[in-house]
Image 1 (cartoon, helix red, strand yellow):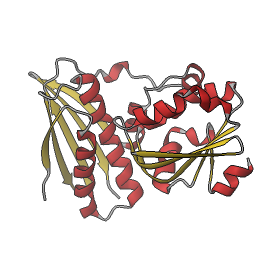
Image 2: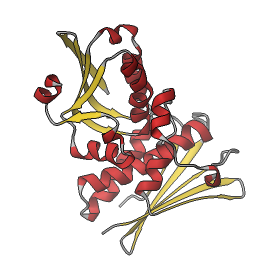
Image 3: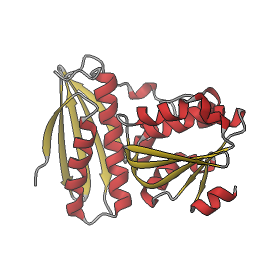
Length: 137
Length: 109
């Protein structure tokens, strides 16, 4: 089973990554709802990396690697962006306030944190690496 | 992502077909941004063929909700697939937005 792909940093590749993760997870007898949740969490981080981290520069690439060990799904996302996400600056958004001011973005990481068991962002040399983990029942 | 629409009795229905992500949500934003949309009493969102929604799609609805409320335009979602409804639930948006099971119930609101 294929467990790694490299995509260029364009929004068009969001669906490519979603389909890749979905096909991988279909081998593990998960419900459609659970597959959708995990695919969504991955999509949110990939969208952030492509749009914000790499400014949709198609000459840049994102590596995606998937693992399943002892019923724990893991995904590793790696890029070479000079900007990296700082999880310590994250605060859970107030949706009522978002509605009041008509804010369009800002709920993606809220979804990721509520869906996944662990979310890690690290910088190793010139590479930013994000790892997400989720125990599969 | 395709968006079809039809209007009857001051009610605009948008029929979403496909996946609403950071790439396709721009199309929905353009539709909801039309000034004439506020001339309707109700805007119904038919989600039967909406197979996927990410925060970008949710964000479009969140960003227009107050504008709709200020103009007394009701925004109602119906025919939502369980996996899509679950995404609204994860954020608690199901209590901020009006989501009903069927078109008949959406029309009756």
